Image (tube, rainbow, N blue to C red; front, side):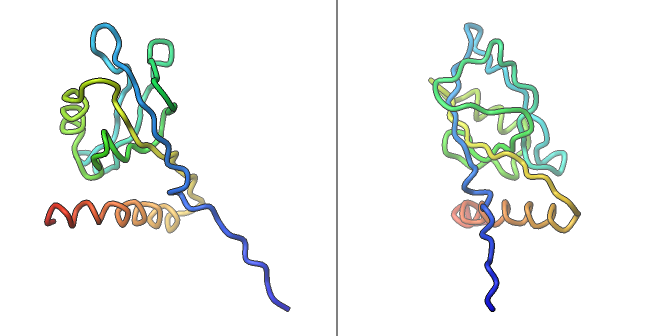
Length: 128
């Protein structure tokens, strides 16, 4: 008798994109946390939904930040990510993914390795 194998959803299918518009003062009204200087992937902190304006999509607190305007931000310190975000004109496009729940340390390490592998193509293009 053969076993039925359940297909698990890969995290890459859960990547979302949103475009945000700055407020009248030029602020994005989103907090970033983590970053390479803290040994973490960058992730979305507090989102001020009352003043944040989306052109399309949406994001929420705790999501991992993968790209800003199509550029990978994995491995960058927060000050570099903020510099990139401030230099962009018009609606700011971000790619994020909701962090999964880990039942043990092994799953957590596997998730981080998958994210690193996802961005290896960008690092290889830069000659790293």
